[in-house]
Amino acid sequence: MGSLKLTSIRKAFGTHEVLKGIDLEVEDGEFVIFVGPSGCGKSTLLRVIAGLEDASSGSMQIDGQEVATVPPAKRGIAMVFQSYALYPHLTVKDNMGLGLKQAGTPKPEIETRVAEASRMLSLGPYLARRPAELSGGQRQRVAIGRATVREPKLFLFDEPLSNLDAALRVQTRLEIARLHRQLKATMIYVTHDQVEAMTLADKIVVLNAGAIEQVGSPMELYNKPANTFVAGFIGSPQMNFIEADRLGDAQAKTLGIRPEHIALSREAGDWQAKIVHVEHLGADTILYLETEETGLLTVRLFGEHRFAADEIVFATPDRSRLHRFDAKDQAIA
Ligand SMILES: Nc1ncnc2c1ncn2[C@@H]1O[C@H](COP(=O)(O)OP(=O)(O)OP(=O)(O)O)[C@@H](O)[C@H]1O
Ligand SMILES: [Mg+2]
Image 1 (spheres, rainbow, N blue to C red):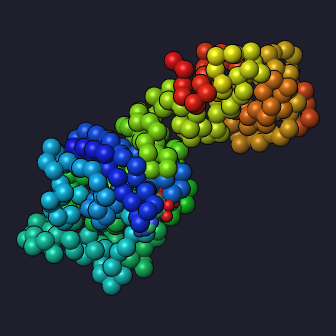
Image 2 (image 1 turned 90 degrees about the vertical axis):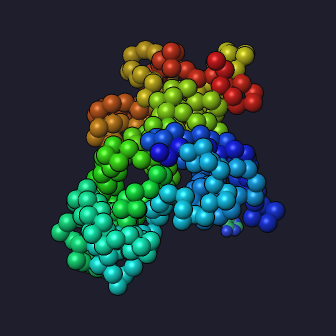
Image 3 (image 1 turned 180 degrees about the vertical axis):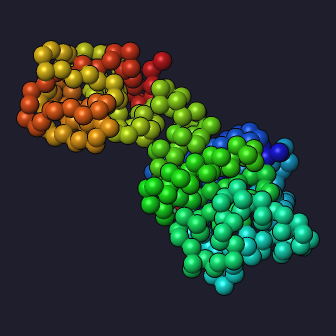
């Protein structure tokens, strides 16, 4: 059990309104990811849910019960921060068990739960070590373990992997996905990483300046962004935006086409283009083109391609993947 319902949550610091009326429903067992630009209110919203920060107004229910009156420690929520905040003088085992000990859990029960968590997170060999004797990834796993032993209904993660190097991020990402499958707990997770968001989430919440722009599954947001903000935010490299009247579309203001939905040819195509720059990534080739119709255009091709700067090529968009937006930047159905 761990469903969550937020209704008109507002939060102001002084006169600065950081959350501007958040309505959100999270189902039991769901993996929900918050994304949005720096400063848009992701951490603040997470802290309000955790009870570390009081909302200025609005209401919040967990499993249908109003939580405003329940003290944070009794809400069945565990939060994992970017900075692991482990106790340096305690061993891994004691760091993981401390919360339970403080809550008066019997010792054998603590032993069992810590053993279970350390097995799930492959921390068995490190139980007697202190945090200073661990790598960053191992410390982060201890922080996650400390949250799981409390068997919360709701896990909150605030950019838990951002201190890790690329390989370790992938490994820990897979561990979190596995943990979610095993525990079937509700998880809310903040990240700046597109791949984490797309791969872990059942549902992504796109926040912008304290308000929700769109909520949907990763593929819904990718295929049907509700507005230009979401269209530009989800997907990397970013969607190309083109003034619609340059392409003879009088109804739309802006057209959008993702870099991976444009084909290139040396012989023929819709838009004659000059290559400005090429990035060879091995698995992909990213090209930056200049065309008369669209201005600067990013194209992503699968695999290696021998295009070079200053070459003249032809770009052709997949018309079925074209996005249309009106003067208010909203998607046209
Ligand atoms: N305790 C506070 N007092 C005053 N302003 C605050 C406080 N905490 C956060 N803010 C402001 O609220 C806004 C949202 O901050 P928040 O930390 O929620 O952003 P975020 O989306 O998590 O950003 P990031 O991606 O950089 O972590 C920011 O403008 C921040 O300066
Ligand atoms: Mg933050």
